[in-house]
Amino acid sequence: MWLFGNISGDSAHFRDVILKAGAFEPMLRIVDSTNNKSMIKQGTWAISNLCRGVPLPDFKYVICAIPTFVRIVEEESDAEVLRDALWALYHLTEKAEFDINQLTDKALERFSAFLSSSLDLVIPSAKILGNIVKAFPEASIKLTGNPEFIPKIYSLLQHPRGNVRRDALYLISSFTRSWEFGKQFFEVTGLIECCMNLILSQRSADSVGAAIILFDFVKFGDLSHVTMLYENGILNSFLHLISKEKKEALSGLRGLQALLKRTGKIKKDDQKLRQICISSLKDCGGLDRIKELCNSKYEKTKLEANAIINKYFKSEKTKDVVI
Image (cartoon, rainbow, N blue to C red; front, side):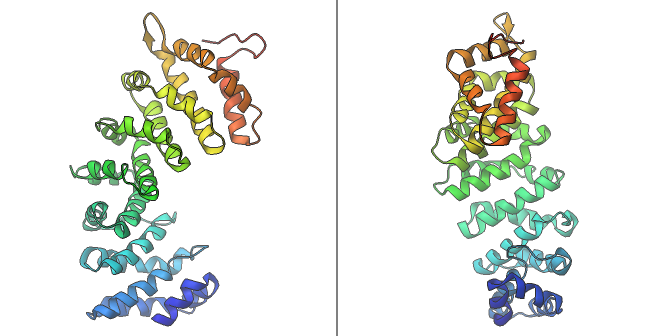
């Protein structure tokens, strides 16, 4: 066990040699059949290493490990054993071939419970749940049916560790891609304000992750929700993002594009809310910044900026607005 675990952990090439030689299934049988705590710990670590690495192993060689890791998650209490099993499951759930039917309801409950455990378990559990919800939206019903689930994720957004916040944002964004489940997060008191504050932070991962959630709220929410987001200052959040570069600017442009599209159907003070947004863009220099980004060296940013100009502004020369 130690030998194969060390070799596979140090070399993806030799990991694949071990897998192709057929050593993996006998290792699984040892872990599944023993009651020796030391062997369970060593074996879980070894088979976990065989499921990891860059590039990830061919799924056909490691799919047989999923029932073993699920059983470990359900039954074991040792933090190190659980950590190794969770990290292996995270990598396995990343694969397109993964089938949610390979998991049990009890395993989902345990992943959720680990969100309020030690960091060694919080991080891989959040990643696993994000992968599952992204690939299998129907899993959202089981998870959000637990009244403690959403508050746990929200609390992680306020964690001092950046990687914990990043994984919490990824998990929430996995839900917000569907308004059926995203609406539940929209209604969490303080979540929108928290996302806006994260956008203002100096940490790019926080800003981009929070922007994705707000973008989903604008794109998929009801018009009443879009109005509420506007009144809470979402335009300023997107403007802050486009003052940056790379992923932050792109996230801000996508947010503005969605906001301008949705506000075309909303009236405020006898005029379309889109007109108010466009006037604000012109007055605060946001339009000038969008024009600058039309020449960005980043292709996606350049395309998004040009799309906004072409759709909502007749020309840079006349600066007329298309409403």
